[in-house]
Image 1 (spheres, rainbow, N blue to C red):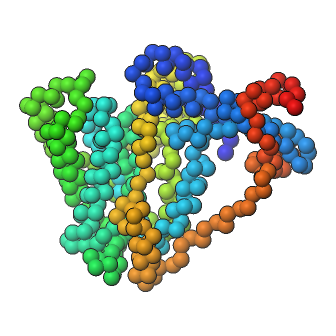
Image 2: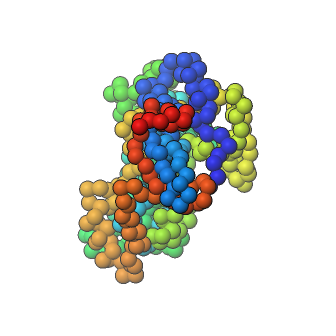
Image 3: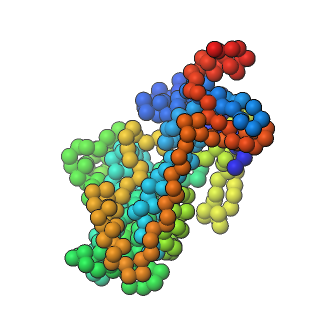
Length: 393
């Protein structure tokens, strides 16, 4: 893939200091992420002096920040994660279900984001498991892999969770694998929507009674019990969006599919079109109009304000597994599922780990295309002096 014309780091280099100065409400975590993206693959993080064995060309490769919000640091993390998931995949159809929080909840999320995101995980998985366990729908114990996204295409807040689910599950005695009653159909989305809404609102009410919600700023009027009841009534009058995509293929298809959703950040560098030092133009997909590609131009300050909204609290886990895919029982349950699946086929063969020498190939030589050999680790000072043409020996 070609190098993007503009990167988020370019915007931060130009306007990052001014943005931080003008927005004192930024959390320590948000400031830390912005600093990491700014320093990623620069001399500030150190690097290597690599060489090409074929033509002798030498070049500096800088270290990456490896921050999960950095647009440049997700490819390798995604590949490692997908490789680890291969052993959990079953050769059955999978379904993709998306749970979205309604717009009315967004003001509450500014000061309670960690709590709302945790409930989004908990209530979506509880809903899927409860409805799937009902004999009227499936009557089975299922496994779920959930991935949180907090953004829409234009970087506005749009919290939703992608759930990838094997189409089927265990009987209550774990002696049979139960398949959906109808091909291409898993669970009724209207039922999922109502159960999800009920569980989430119940969690809201409990937190309100216990005084656990931070109600300040635009949400301060909700401290009044009458206003709170009116707010809850609005939530119950709203149809909560649950979207189920048709079932797709087995293990190999699931790996390709998951790669589109795991380890994504709010915006890819390849969606950025131009930056004049003050205004940034980027592409976005208009899902409401047949996925048309459109362009949007924002000031750098507004772009960064939208971007930092999607920086998760430190330590918050955005990819989770539950049901028979939960970490506590995954190995045993997946093994049992394979034995119960009469038509099950082996997992996609995991790629053999390459044995790298201490100085392994890292990237292609820009002159001759041969493999560049990773050189010794160098400090920021050494890299700076090398780039200036000084001898650091």
